[in-house]
Image 1 (spheres, rainbow, N blue to C red):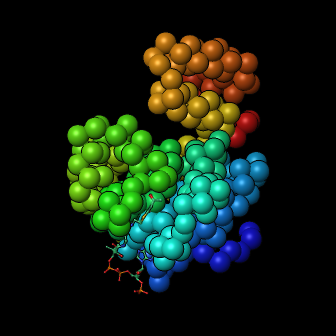
Image 2: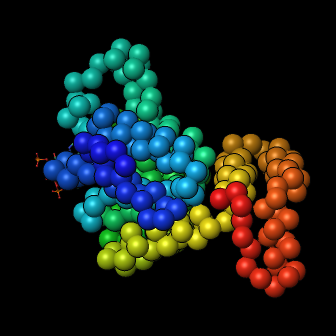
Length: 259
Ligand code: CAA
């Protein structure tokens, strides 16, 4: 596995693990760090033996946001021409394999946005989410004003973005921002266990499910239902569908070929 400056890449059987590692800055998401996440995702995406990916940070911070030191003097023309900040962030969203964010500690600003770009968030009981950009004289720039309301509704999203207050793990679970809350010391192992379960299934089916669920946020209901129906029909062209249903009828565990 390659080595990077700001991320640590590891694997556990069929699960790829990306650990943000810029501890002195609480994993502030400088350009190089985000590019390295992209490179690590490229490698896992290209590796047929990887079926799901976990992105995590440290016990104190998943990520405390975009790098304020790098942004402070940025001009409008630099920001605009460089397509700051999503230029290299969208790679997380375009990853076709399932990606879980395992969040402990601070997930603020771009850190919260990065977590929301993943397919779902598993939170430690220590997790704190927030979009505090307003306190810096700017606004969320990597999806916070769009993904947060879709996740938790307008009232809470508007309140969080307008006040910059933090939301703890329990509230985040109640609000629908995170799939589940687990004790902090077991977070990464639990995320790997969930990813391992996902990666035991048919990968093309997991990819189809991911595309279909994402459609729910990108289209109207009729278009989304049509996309689901056609993708469901397409699944009948997969050997893994024959295997999955045969295994059920024969009362044995399935052995998926296209993992
Ligand atoms: N960018 C750059 N450096 C950061 C940083 C960030 N987002 N967050 C923390 N750091 C640095 C601090 O400057 C500090 O560095 P020094 O030791 O050199 O002083 C170090 O990390 C440790 O941070 P603190 O001393 O502040 O730690 P703390 O425990 O007292 O506080 C915190 C933790 C509440 C998370 C606090 O660090 C904080 O408020 N960070 C900024 C959070 C924020 O505003 N994020 C939004 C950024 S804007 C954005 O993300 C735009 C977007 O939508 C893409």
